Length: 512
Image (cartoon, rainbow, N blue to C red; front, side, top):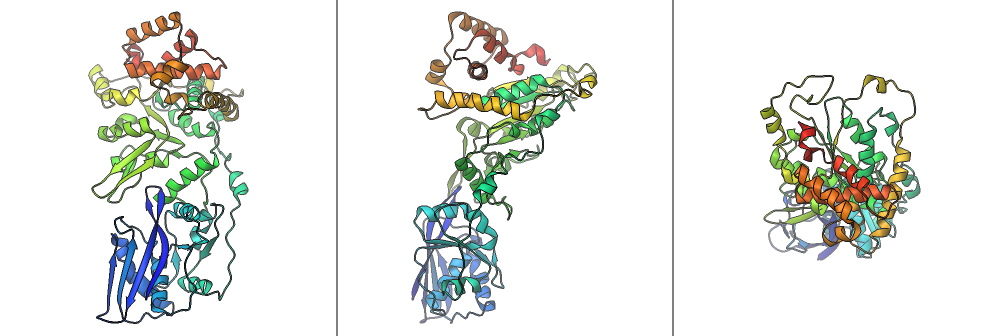
């Protein structure tokens, strides 16, 4: 007899339908053959499933068993096929009088005792089941909260193989899981840090406000202890809240990567990722034998903070260029090519020199010009050109650390940022982008027009500072955002002047 069970496999952060066919023939020598490009964990499921069936009180008679995972030309990976395979074997052997499994999506890993263990990628699977018109989805209990955020689909959490069989045989009744989306959503403003805790650094806060308003990348340059990391960690507190579709995107990435905790059904706050400088290119961008999301994708819709930027391996930093331009990262292997979202705000920090005290009035720099040049040369020009704002963060004087007067808080900054983003959303409503950081080509000319006086001012500054063509574009984008924050339709000289001040590395004399 042939039985068919429906499940799903992951391709990037999305899922596609997989039909698991089980043929159990009583004639011939007993055997177990699995076809359909099954990877190691899937092929090993035979041993787990057979032990789980035996220890759950079910007996599969000796037979020649053939299992096909269709479509056969797509690779299958992971342990989520255990439950569908076990139920397919039971139906094919007619060991239980279970009702037809048509219209059901099933997934779950089995222990040797028959208990169901959690799997990764349940949210994409649930979205696929809903879009495919499935009548229900059955997953392990530990994954049920994650799957239940998908509306329009009945989701059942099962604890064991035996419970699954009894439920499908209608010996027991279970209620579909319900998700408290309102309760989840109420936690999205829960931040335990605030910009009001940062003393001084008003110039850096202004740069953060501009960067967050236009979606620009940001680089802090300053000595150790000046507050670069403190500032970066508070940037998510001023970014606009995630929308529901954005939250689903982020949660899908974390689900596929296996970074969702059992009690976390939906990620409702913007991510902040801060990998160590020893990270590999595969860890940053994603990869592996069967590619998994990297830090750039885990920072999707949030902030990726790279502290001590020159300490990262040069080839690791160079792979950032594609996601910074495209908002996506493509990982190609001989057997598969996957694309993951990577639309993040890059925030980086570096010391002005190897010892960290170049330009610091309180300490003496001991670095030679050659050492400083070698230190800076670790960062390529093309990478730095993709960072819009380059801001000096000097050490804060002790008298400012003692001040008790109120400083700019996150709520005030966020209100101004949201207003500027609303202006941009209206301006670009009919276009394929929504922020000033994406302006280029004809759109840059259309939305950043300059008078002769403004053009002459900018051209003179660019020539004096030796800016590249890409840096010229960055200055215009920053000026457009500054004008939006000021509530002005046109860019004027003051906006251009302030924008140029945020290109520290182009102003060689200020760095040395």
